[in-house]
Image 1: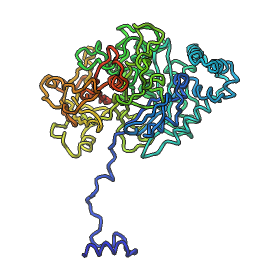
Image 2: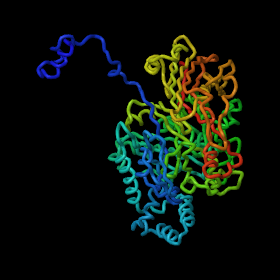
Image 3: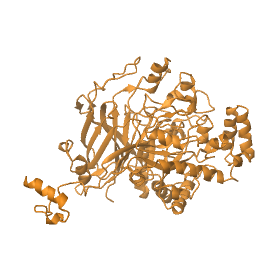
Image 4: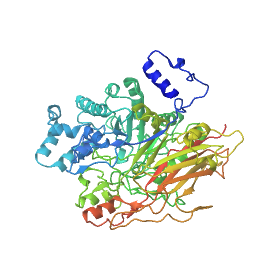
Length: 624
């Protein structure tokens, strides 16, 4: 009763301060551990690469949903797709970047509105005439030929782009809810020299007020990434904001994305390396147009290297040749970066890893059972176009053609952060404390250090201990004073609505003394079976029922944790390490389609898929 009386006195007394209440004097101990906690303690899932009707190659082929629709859908609302199908996410996203193409930004909505400025141009009149004649294919042909010519037909009317950009930033501003949902502002620079993919998504840290001071840089301005970086530097001064760029789809660059010379053909230099590392801290390693981690020809000892592979050619009809492959995939680029750093002191390929969609439907759908396709024409339907539309190697024959059934329901960017705000999400992207998933929301955390042990895996304070005694994904691990080997602790948790986990792996790349590089993939935890000296004791199995398009969690495990100390570590060799987590097999989207629409699964399409995550690397650099 004394304590109750004291509490009543505190509430109703009104005059007494905390220092006046007996027994409430502050002590040296701090009861709550959280006021001083500052490390990232949440993971947020989002898409840094979504297109709406404001992208000409989306709006000119049937997408009528604008940025507002895209944000509403990402926030969990039900939206009617461009083909009249109701769509909704199982769970809302935490953040989204509407990254519409800068080239002829907003063209399709302006045509639909019969914008007088657009229709005052010969280009606009040609497009309008084709649409009035019910010839959308003809309108598309007019636009695509104009784009291929490299000269902007609307260059004399910059107000068109100013207004379109303002509409996009306005939608982002309206939907940005700090702490609940982050609407990042961005656009895509669509460089395609010779129809080879050198695309980058540019993302702003701040809001509309600063972003409206610029007009997005397009491939009409330049095809050269170095010119984009120069523009970004100027844009930071103009907007008062920080910017970063994320390249994607090196697998469609025919050897240009991670080339051995500049786009101009000139040799690399330190200045080029420094600028690339500054402006491009991340790489979009997985998305609809194929997975870009590695290739079976580059990683022949990696049994999981051949995953959702697009390796026939580029965006256009030019076929790919084997010598292009080493300059197209993330793992090999990470390896080569070690060599460049040894030679010059700068690593141009020191990037973290994210996934995103590149959907052109305004709908960020990455679930295999909820996949709305690459473009509006291939949204869910029994029409053969859903599988047979050519979406890569356009204009070529079967040697280079990539069909809609080969697209992936991928991917997502996972960000470790304390707050769901523009600044916090952007800062996590910039420092590379991020990872990629192929569409599911599995959680992964890794720390590297020199004092970790297997006993640390079940710690209640795993994250706090990891930050206090090591470094997270995306960071640099400094050398140990005694040359000790790096030790890694990893924990992974399945998507709460998804599949159990098959295994945790560590991928290591290193630079040998002779200047060549090497790699290895090591299993460090196995779901439902033993970890042997040479890896998991056999495959995890497959519960997928093809006819019913179902699976069970009878195999694998919901939670996996692994410890690994590098047994072959050489403190004089540069190295990187990243974590790959695989789920058990689940039905691929083509298998779900077969059940829903009663159509045949395309020949060559896998029945099941092993979704996965790739963390950003941790780099080790020896003492000079």
